[in-house]
Amino acid sequence: EVEVVESGGEVVPVGGSLRLTCIASGLPNDEYAMAWFRQAPGKEREGVSCLAWKDGQTYYTDPVKGRFTVSRGNGKNTLILQMNSLKPEDTAMYYCAAGYRLGRIGCTSNLDSPGPDFGYWGRGTQVTVST
Image (cartoon, rainbow, N blue to C red):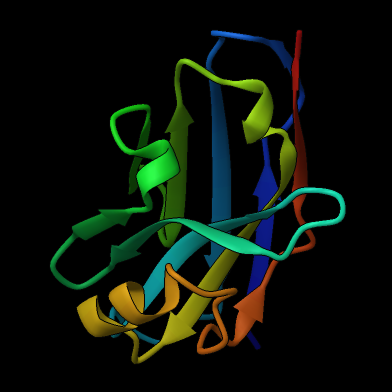
């Protein structure tokens, strides 16, 4: 059974930094992708960043390019999202997702949508950027 757990969300000031961590347990091998999505109140869930686990290719949506960095953590199946230069519009619930047999194509086809092909989701961690 696959389980996805996020952590690290908190209240930060505008311009601050935050590091989110996601651990996905139960994935059988490296044929998958892991991604971050977010959802602000009253808005649809949107893609943030994705990492194709087998080759490490990373992807970002335009609102976060140059400010956010996604990477593998030290632990097995650990995904890190380093967020810098945070803006009020980054305020949202951040969700980590894992998709089995999703590689580069899975990342590119899902980041511009709410992520329908990702089968495993965490419960989310709240990020609030205060003015």
